Every structure is written in C-alpha cells, then in structure tokens.
Length: 220
Image (cartoon, rainbow, N blue to C red; front, side, top):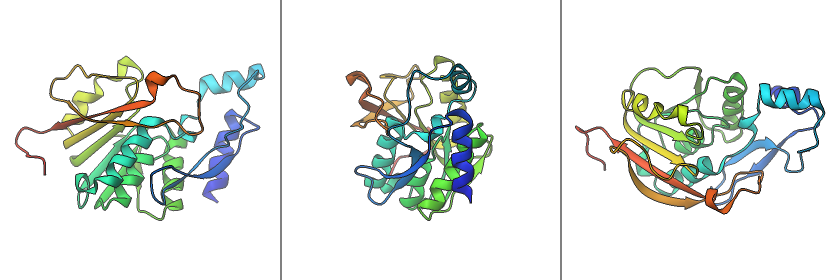
C-alpha cells in the first residue's frame, strides 16, 4: 500500500510519528495524509535529530501558503480550469491537487525529494484526482504554481526560471512580502496556518499571493 510506504518514509526520520488523514479547513472535500498533530517535537534522540536535519519530512505538513493557494484555486477555478498546470516544489501536493479539483486538464507535481513525490501521489489518490509526478521541471505549461518555496533566499532564481516554463505563474508565500522581480504583482492576501499547527508567529499567518503573466498573454 502506498500509504504504508509513506508512513515508512516518515518513520525513517521520526520513528514515533504516523500519517493521519486530515480534512482541510475551507477546502471543500480536500484531504491530506499528514504527520499526526501530537508528534514528538523534543527533546529528540541525537540520532533522530540528525535524521531530521538530513532528511526533513516537510512533505508531511500542509504549509500555510500551500493551503492558501489551494483555497484560492478552489474559490476561483478559472485560473486553472482546462489548463495544464505544474506545481513546483509540490511537497504534500496540496496546490496541484486543488488545481486538479478545480478542473485543470493536466497536473504535474514536481519535487526533487522522492518522498515528496510519493506524498503527492498518495494524496492525489486519496482525493481521487489524476496527478503526475516528476523530479524535474521541463516543458511549457499554462500555469506554474509555487507555494512556500522562497523560505530560502537562494531559491529566488526560481522566479525567473518559472517564467521560461509557463504562461502564468502564481506564487504564494507567507515569509516573503514582496518579490524582487517587478513583473510579479500581489493580487491577494489569505490567512492560513500550517497543519499540523506549528505555533507560527502572527507575521507568518498571512500568505501573499503574487501573479506573473507572459507579456503576450492577457489574463481572463
């Protein structure tokens, strides 16, 4: 069973953790398999701490910006309906799954972490939507999604890379309030917390949503 494999991947990092299926607030029927809310946060055994540092199970969380982007797409499906979509840095697959539920014609979840790709596939099956997975970004897409990928400033070049692969780019991030590329404009702010709750600071409770459109295209 894929879910057993996913829980096995989680326990390689956190031996006492497990996967629980959670319904997401304000996302209709969308559900995800996430780390149990009462997982042990510390003090951790030194070997476990090293495993967390070496291979963090970020895909076992629904990060706030991903949740915000999912809500945006489900409430405004015209952004992705009938279009090809790639979710870059997909993690749990939340944004790509929401795009599929909103009527996207084809969705690919792209992540370099094989456990994240497994999580995306498992969560897509849980929601009964078609979702492909890939370890690299290639080809041209109607819409490229990025949520919670700019936490590291070294990832900012992804903004330019995204423009070479898509006609439209949507970026959601709670830790970045403005983007260095003037081609991206803020179109919304959505309050959303990471699940399970990490006790985030108030400043990280709001996801900023940015939009870039290729110059020769006009938004609907």
